[in-house]
Image (cartoon, rainbow, N blue to C red; front, side):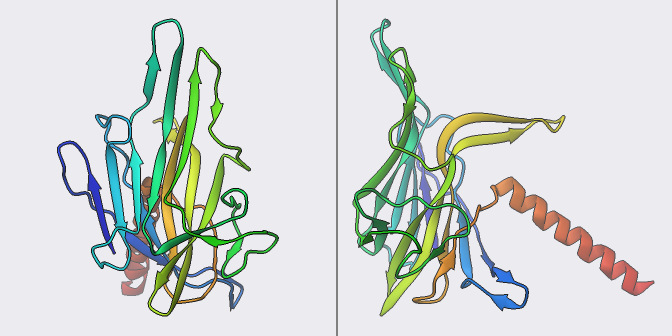
Length: 234
């Protein structure tokens, strides 16, 4: 899967994918999911100039283009309106599930040809935008939300079928300081993209760990593996 992140000046960013199997006891309840983490935007990037392109089938056609950037404020000194958020542009092979609005779901929802409890259908959208506005005129999100953390079901046309998946979206940016205290700031962003590896198999939505959490998990696995090796050698 090709991922291209463009900044000013243009440069390439690296991201990575992991494959997860969601299981309950000995029964698999979801297809394998490839997880694509989204790089943090450059602190120098202005509104919608930090661009990350996802080409899942590596056919040189961008399937999803993510546009982000720093907060933008417009005003005359008396009335000021600031915005922070992102925009998603979709290639021709990507569809979202929608009725009157694009469907938002919580963790643990199965995404397939149909979605439990949801009315609507798979449709192609050119773009989708989530913003938070604030300033002298008031504050609020640009669209109604079911939660601060949610998923948007997607599917990708591939060969003779579809790969089902989801966009993991968080309205808050959470950071830990050295004392272990958590701080939260409003910054709508895409944490990552989950996409099934098998055609026409449903997948379950879940909260994708932030890149720092993935690294900590990998470090913990390596430590446990090293301890196990030492125990076997003793």
